[in-house]
Structure formats: structure tokens, C-alpha cells
Length: 263
Image (cartoon, rainbow, N blue to C red; front, side, top):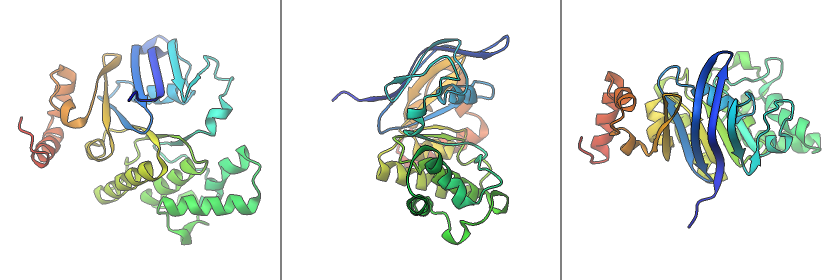
């Protein structure tokens, strides 16, 4: 059966001023999968993330998201698409002057004509689904722990019932226990809400636990797109070096043993 495409990136080039970040980059994300983007420092993970979110105009190439071709003009905002995707930024990006409940409700107030009562009910539901403690919904972002902040931002990201979810370093700044719980929550939400997820992460545990496939960026393009248990054995020098550093070797040995894989 032919897989449906959620995101298609064709011959993409991006950059800032005189610096070229990507050149002839190609990437396909299929509906219903979790695809992670990884790569060494400076490879352009954040730049690609911004281009996919229509925050950075491409210098060349095409980006199609959920069947809509993104315009080269950032002023031509794809408002219909805003209703179909959700975003969790690395810092959470909650509005500091609004409570958690108000932050979660904000997209519904801006993009729908639902009644205030229904908006609040939906916000409570999505906060509950994100395992945010409901006795803290009237707190402000500055009063939250790192884990609570991520869960509040995740609730806001899914409040519009998106088809596509973008996650930027979702476990960044969390301790290992909180990061593991968030990974499990992302897996649960992906299955229960039938989401397509694109996640940028350097957390090897997240790559193993969450991603169906992992796209490795390097040399201004996507060097490989494979499941983790295949990607860690890739022979490209940049990929090999990334996964054979001290931290990577520890993860690799642990996961290889658990999957019955020998190097």
C-alpha cells in the first residue's frame, strides 16, 4: 500500500546572509510516522525546522506540508495550515503574562469562534491528556518546573486537534526521569491522536524510544533516513563519528544488546 506523504522537501536551499546552511536537501515525512532529525552541531536542524514552519524563506526548492505548497513570501501566512499543525518549541515559548490555562486556550480564541465555556473545556481536556497537574492551571510560566512547562506547551500544541506535530528538542533541560516520561507521553499521544510527528532532538534516548525513522543532517543535506537500529551502523564518516563518541557508544551497546544486534 502506498504511504501518504505529510511533508515533502525537494531540493531545498537555505541560508543567512552569505552563509549557506542547506543545499539540494530532500526529505519525505509520511503520514502517521514519527520522524526525528539529528546531526552534529551546526548542521542546520533548527534552520530546517524554521523553514518547515514557514518562519524562514527558502533560497531555492519546494516545501509541501499536508498537500499545501509553502510560499516563498513569509507575509503570505498559511493560516489554514496553522489549524492543522501544532508546535512545541524548545523553550516552551509560553506567553509569560498568561496563565497555563490561558496559554492553552489562546489558539482556540484566535482561530475559532467557539464559546468561552467550550474553549475552557477543551483546554482542560488537552492539559489532562498532556498529564499536566490540573491544580496548577492558573499558574504562570515562571512558576512552573521544566517538566510542567513542557507539558503545558504540549497541551497548547495539541489544543487544535492537529494532524501534524512539530517538536523542537522536547526533552531539553529535563532530568532523565522527566525526559523518559515525556517520551512515553509523546508515544501515547501519537498513537491515540493518530498524529504525524517531526521531532528535532539530540537526545539519543528520544531517538530510540520515539522515532520510527531518523534523518541525519550533514554536509548541507540529508545523508540518511533510517530506523535507529540501522542508522547506528551506517558507514558515512559523519554518522559513524556521531554515534561512536563515548555517550553514543554507551547508548548503542545498550540498545544493540536489547535488540539482539551484534556490531
